[in-house]
Image 1 (cartoon, rainbow, N blue to C red):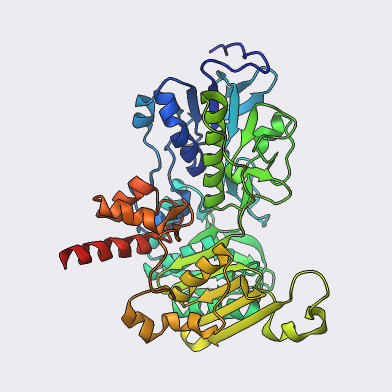
Image 2: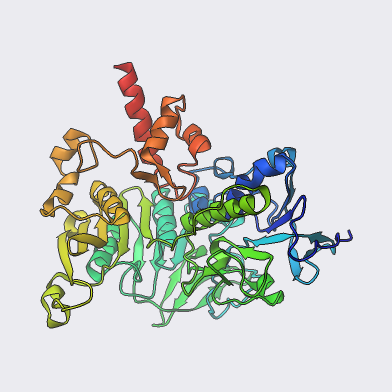
Length: 522
């Protein structure tokens, strides 16, 4: 296929050609936002996905691997519906080169796609550690039998096979993804060991006391935890399949499946080949435009706005997708220009597992008695000192830490206290002050609050309060959807997008549905 001639620089084409490379959750959101314009014939929209499958929610790959969801439930796009609306969908297709001078994307089959605007949504790939017996090509990793990451549906299938057979699984990495997979696999009957480098799981996000309480909670749920363990290599059998993970102290963890949960690295090779500036991700300006070019943009895991490396979280990627689509509608369709894209909010890290509920965010490294040290004394100028309140019940796996400046919550850990976690998340994201009596937060998980039936300290939960942080859906928006006929979580998700990200809000959505129909029945 010969690429059409690019439109002259500075001109606004009658039907702008927008090409999206990557078809993950962020690309699906971007395409969805421009879909009405494509259906109206106002622009040409093409999306190129390397996987054979259309976009699905990768955040739930571990749930898919343990049989708690299905690919159909994870789907974020229907190619037939998109094609009916004028969107060209190319799955199982790899983009190999970007020719910026000709504004063309070259595909692996030798054909080309001309563009007026190119959006890179190439995402990230799993980090494969450099271990003896495990050193594949970092750009196109081929893992030996018995070794998998947790990035796509094929990885989920390998995990599912081990879980169904109640095999031995070792998870390498103490991050959220690895811990959720470990807890779910253990509950489904597999024998699971988590191996991580630091002194406690989630070492980069949680403080030492909270991490120790978390490790104890994991063990109570049947997950073995090997901390301060540095892996050095793999032991394989005659068939080349994985047999054991070798550690620096000379010991080995025997298993049938090794799950790599060592983080993810932005996919920037296409941008690098096009001569674009990259750091950890594709460097973009405040308008998500790649530096030193006019027609190329990047969103999601592969994009790096400013000096901060990509977070790998779905909510910021969706926010970028919404904003960039609004920018293009303003540029090409005459709609009002969107407000400037604000800075990415400090993330709230959630660990969602049956029996282990954790939320952590912000500044949590300071200990209570550190606040009385000379280094933390009030200064004539500058921010007020941190103040820390802490409550711990290791026997029952409960731990709450709250860090404030001038009463405003700037960091917290809430483990084994789900209602406190929900309230602290709201306070943290709104920049609100904590109650002067900090025990009010703790009492949310007490028997009195359970009898009252409400997770919030306030008598009437605010309809504007964010229920689904990934998709930016308020409590009131979900209540409105339920009031107009949505009776299941899936129906609410289709109407509002709530619950289509990490899944942490699905219980909250379900509660609102139950409250509505209980009131209607009464």
